[in-house]
Amino acid sequence: MINVFFEDTDEFDLSKFNIESNIEKLVTNENKTLGDVNYILCSDAYLLDINRQYLNHDYYTDVISFDYCEDNVISGDIFISVDTVADNAKEYGVTFEKELARVMIHGVLHFVGYNDKSDEEVPVMRAKENQYLSLFD
Image (tube, rainbow, N blue to C red):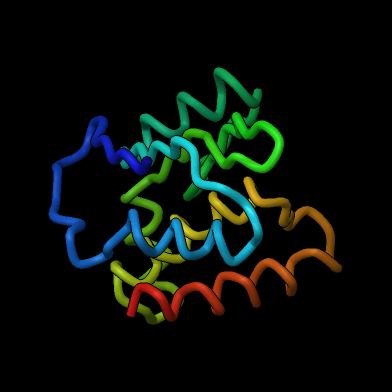
């Protein structure tokens, strides 16, 4: 099940994203089962507090994922800063919606086993993001 929450930011309509079915397609395509994934859309300040409190990082970011997966069941919390997503959309010359979809996918890709810490992992993660972005178009 997919849940969406808004913290310290204005709510907006996400119905056109078909999040539940699109994320379920991603998870199924990666040979996993969808459990409970919570998206928490928030402000920069809110996510900075999460980053400081739980990861001991003192910087802004667009997405932080907390993985609660067990075996092949994908579950976790994905915190997304709508402020940073908006800034990144402008910087990369894409719509807010496309950048938001990318980070929503990015968080789940971490849960199914993809990482982006090394130079070798980054292109694989980007390719997977692009592959699954087509579901959101």
